[in-house]
Length: 95
Image (tube, rainbow, N blue to C red; front, side, top):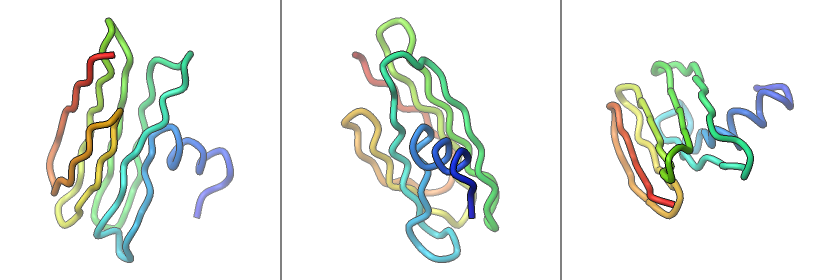
């Protein structure tokens, strides 16, 4: 499905993994390395585009996430765990 560099970006830095057939459910668990302050990724699926962006700035970690219609996402971001449906979401965590 992905080449090794693409897989690293999609599955680890952005943290997007498809967990059910047909892309009905995904997990989003980004990896935030110590010296990286920004990551943005889009994965095209049959249901639409999954968009993930995270930033680290001013003592705060921010996750911006867009999930297409018909998909459910299990999010694990810096200790915040949520299950969400389609829509756009922002999660902020103080360092």
